[in-house]
Length: 135
Image 1: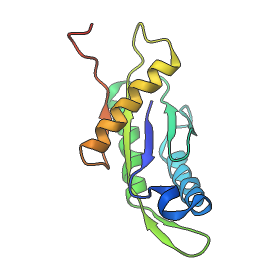
Image 2 (image 1 turned 180 degrees about the vertical axis):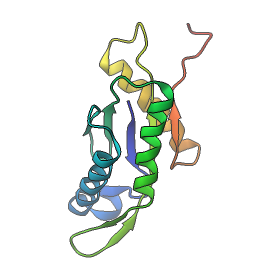
Image 3 (image 1 turned 135 degrees about the horizontal axis):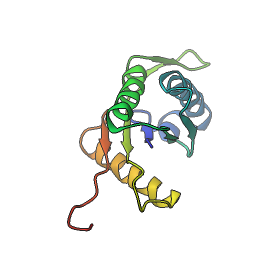
Image 4 (image 1 turned 135 degrees about the vertical axis):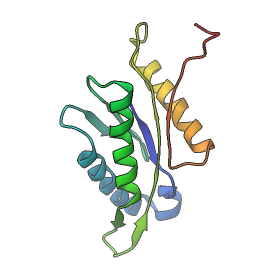
């Protein structure tokens, strides 16, 4: 489950709500092209997307997420007023594992990994890994 946010937009602050929405709609289209037909994704907040990668092992999950990250990095976003933007994305994700049945908890773990990705320099993918001491 990636939880992601375009990095260098600071959308609403920098562009205003209308123009930021235009950029995010285009980022969502890039996401749609990058994921498989079996995957589910949606915009879940002002600047965030989330998704469920169905029947996916760790290697395949990373490949799908990296395909999205690279595709967005290489896409020029063109707003209705002609402004062109290049944006990147930070992605946090986690595995669904035994004992993790609460969607809110699952999303929070992926969100925690997202914040780690941003803290480590952005434009990267971080997987949430449980603390071995806590288990």
